[in-house]
Length: 335
Image (cartoon, rainbow, N blue to C red; front, side):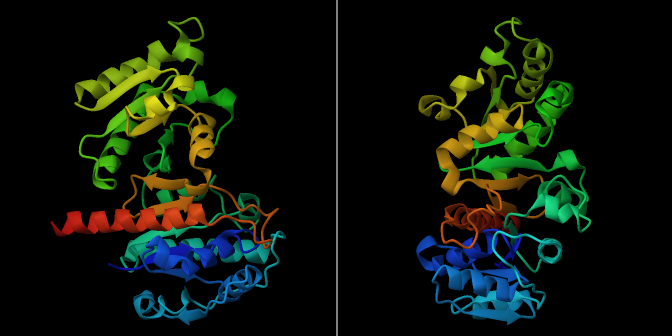
């Protein structure tokens, strides 16, 4: 299998140090070989500040990852900056954007089996011409998809959750919900659970929007007008879908045993339980793309960058998940 491509993220954030720490733990964690695009000195500095005695080796071709990975972190390309932890700047943002674009390109070319993206600083990227709400929307466009065809799923050991609406004001959520949005996203989620996660008969639980799932219209009509009809459509198509469920009861230990993924109506309805349960192992995985893409489910954490406090668990989990999905896709393609 081809190696994974890792984008550096913002050089002033915790991305470089958790990449370095993940490589240091590669054997005990069972991580597939990967290369990082750019930032050799950034990675070296991040490793040094964490007290890691590791080597960095610049490579010119992803294919050289296999011979380098056991002894050093392979870094593809010579693009670099002088980064100061916790102090993002435009040169660092430009490197982060270059790293993301090049890592994605290698995946599209088939030279990499999957993409793992370290956290970016959206405000800094906007100043260097990045016009997307996040990396997911960027990836959708470069893969030739409409923005809503790339579906963000947060996955951890305890829960998989998908927010139907993501980066928008809470007041805008009801107006953005539709039967078509729910059914389209549910189909993408069900297909990904089957193909990428090996779940033969995926079960999807759908949250209500309002408290108590509307309580028969007392707290809103979105459940009856939008969500329930969408569920009926999906059931008629043969999908194992239930709901609309009151969100306050759907994430209890017992309830979580009844479904493989929860479809939430808005950002915090999905991310609050995921981060409460699996913050150090939470992975953001993009469904619906022709390439494999995962990311740790946390941000740049500029406030703790360079202080040795950043936990690498989510990056390790993202690397492992990308490798597992890539292997599953390769096996299915070969079959």
